[in-house]
Image (cartoon, rainbow, N blue to C red; front, side, top):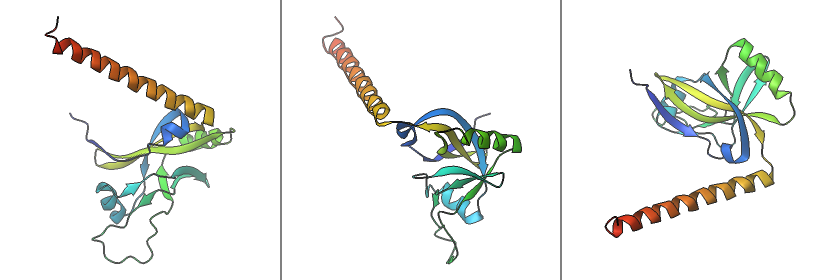
Length: 162
């Protein structure tokens, strides 16, 4: 059976700004119009994070645009906190980890899995400027190596493979 997954939104800055320690998957409580809007890709994770309140986990600062065919909704807040569906023992573990200095929970991507909207979020530690510079340097080195390999393979084929 094929896995029915489709990515709706990703947080590209997460891997640059944070060192990812562990990833978790969670369901997301949404209203009907939010589901329709998210499935159309009108969702953004820029600046979003996960918090725990009263023994529950919430996705905060995630922007889901109003569904354009839903009519006029005067009380709709696109940035409202949305509850994450986790087991109590998972929430307790997250609360314990959040008390450690420097750890935070950031959403990495929102996707559809078997018809349900899921959030993949990470337990992460913020990078320092030095670490970010190292990441940029490694990325540039990898790109240059890839480019040189590609050019050397093109030279072999342009001379008839001799």
